[in-house]
View 1: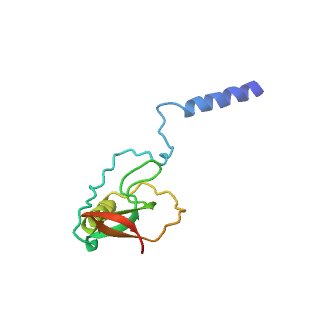
View 2: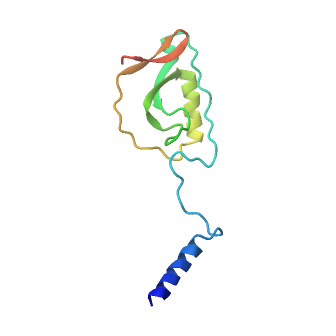
View 3: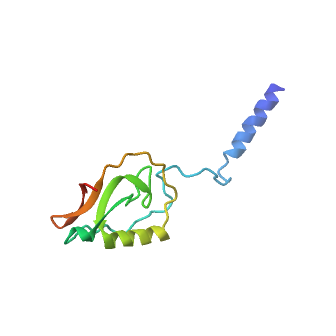
Length: 121
């Protein structure tokens, strides 16, 4: 009786592992089936008014995806950010990880002709 059950379980496992059966496993965080390439980030600025601050992830990276909220502040031009957000609307992230991070007061500023993150708020 036990031997028959053992054979049945082994047969079920082998059938379940057949290469002809479709995969139903979800992708792991950080894996992508199709390469997502967001628009290039533009940093060149003439004044602080040209720059904006975001906590959005700007590129796909291990354990997260572009367009997801993140814990790291980035600064870029307002035009570049608008292009990025439009791209995100057309190419949503397949998943976004939960957040749990403290975010100190920061702002965007034009420093030496480049948008940068600086302390303040």
